[in-house]
Image: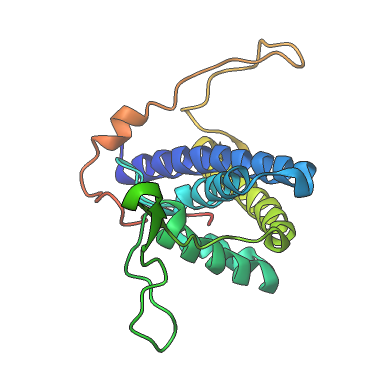
Length: 218
């Protein structure tokens, strides 16, 4: 297996895995839209965090294969590019991480500083509670999320199909390459399954995890 084939297989795998994450994010976004105003704050926040985390998963380091190249975002509409950056920001600050360093613009105060609440109880007793500010994604952003996810799913599907074509189809001769199983004896609609053999591709030298190589069709 040469380096080109190995990198194509890694690219195909991370695009397929990323597509699955995007479909999950889209399903949760649709479900949140269907719930409407009836969701509690905890349910709303949990679903929004799930959406942002799943959406961003393909663009974070995937052990063994690296990230999907950010070049794929070039195919987004202008509005969706803005939404993509917003989702990425939220994922990094609160969706996938508990970032305590985020500050108010132009100030030294932390947005998520903890507030302690002291309550006087009978017989000179006290109770100390707390309140932790949450950087909430409001419902008004949901329609933009749904549009963004739909566009990105289309881009991933196109790129995945193109990369599979690079690996298994000779475009000059217009015929399958040797790695594709023989289907000449199959009937219409019949299928044959075969492994990508990603483990072999991961043994290929000259690839560094996270370098975003071999995004041929992205």
